[in-house]
Amino acid sequence: MENETVWLTQAQIGILFGRDRTVIGRHIRNIFAEDELTENEVCANFAHTTQHGAIKGKTQTTDILSYNLDVIISVGYRVKSKRGTKFRQWANRVLKDYLLRGYAISHRIDAVEKFVIETNQKLSEIEMKIDIVKQYIEDVLSDQNDINEDTRMQLELFSQTLADLQANKIWIDKPQKPMLN
Image (cartoon, rainbow, N blue to C red; front, side, top):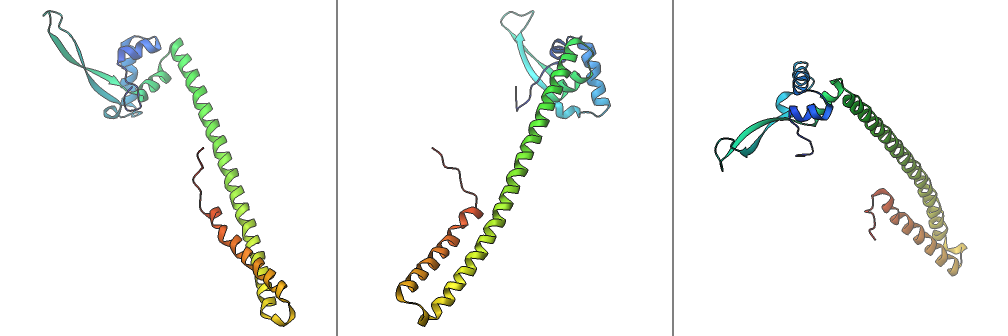
């Protein structure tokens, strides 16, 4: 595995799907001929070092053409064999599972977004009501002849509490980092 993909030779792909290397080569040529994949993006030469067959103690290096996971999957959807069929069944299950999970996650995100919108609407309504009450308190306080000192202090305290509530509402508008235990 390299760079989040798997690399196999034609022979290894043949073993994987239970078919001859020449059959795999034909499928790969068709994949490129039909522009399903771009050859220079999915193929790579890997140096392979082995013992030299004729000269003892000497090694030789040859480039081995390998194909990435995209090619392996494409061949798996083309090849006619029992292992090819098993691969397609497995791949279809995995794809279906990912699609359903993606749908479920998307559905949950939509529900959370709806909840946030509804909560923000309710908060806006509460803020409007707080503003009305604060204005009423300010009006009452401006007419000092009608209230005694205790009532004025209670109204000022209540007005300050409402102002503090509005000021602390900021945490709802800005996402918080989750607390780590």
